[in-house]
Length: 42
Image 1 (cartoon, helix red, strand yellow):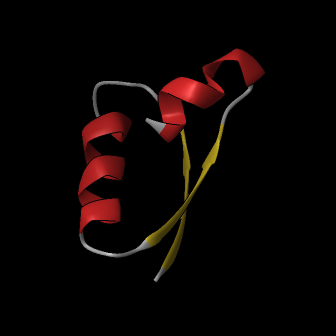
Image 2: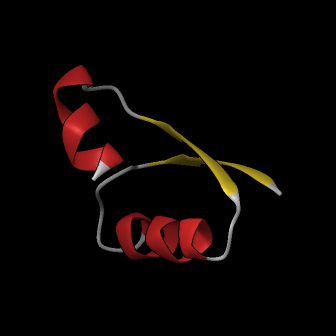
């Protein structure tokens, strides 16, 4: 499933994104701060 997430590194979004990726979903993350890219990709 393709999923888009905002609020990339918050207390809810971060563990939620990790779970989605582990389950094989395609996750697109939207952030207003380009400096967070490496943290998001990790």
